Image (cartoon, rainbow, N blue to C red; front, side, top):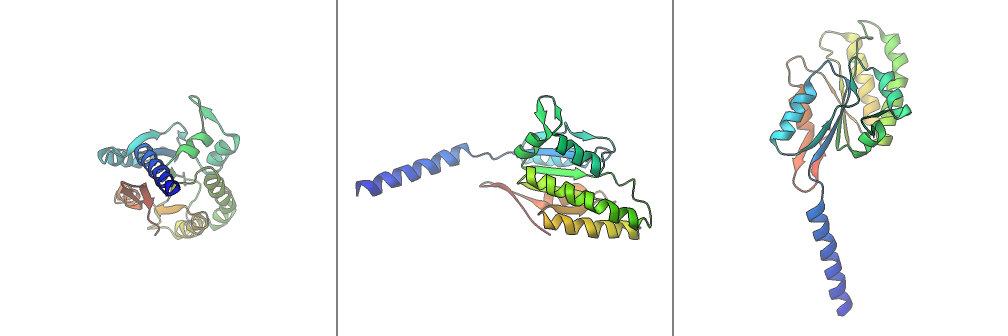
Length: 194
């Protein structure tokens, strides 16, 4: 009987320690091309819900493409006393807006060539971040080659459990991202797959 009581007390103590020390805020890392301000809107909504711990934009640069982001992670670059791998490990949410300026209408060969780079990038991201990763693809409303790109890249994203969404011309991108994360008191958030 004493053993059962001791086990119950220990179990209850562990639960209470977990409950009162759990991290309920989102550490948000933004990578990629900073020409789109979607991440500021996401940050604002997370602040409004009082769920934002910090937004890390240290590794966000103008016109970052697939290769540049991959190389940053591979070289584990450091800015302001933090490495990119450390930021990815700490992240609860990572969003990446890639620069798609290289992909012009009917450039299917380039898309096929870049596909292997994208697959390597997604694998590298997943190796360093076990939480929610959202990659924003280009708007493909008027382009057959960008529809092809989005389909191909979405398949790679699914393989590495990464959420892939296309940019929306009607400014619903922020809402789409927020809808992908379900704020929740027990686990901070869970992502909803498409």
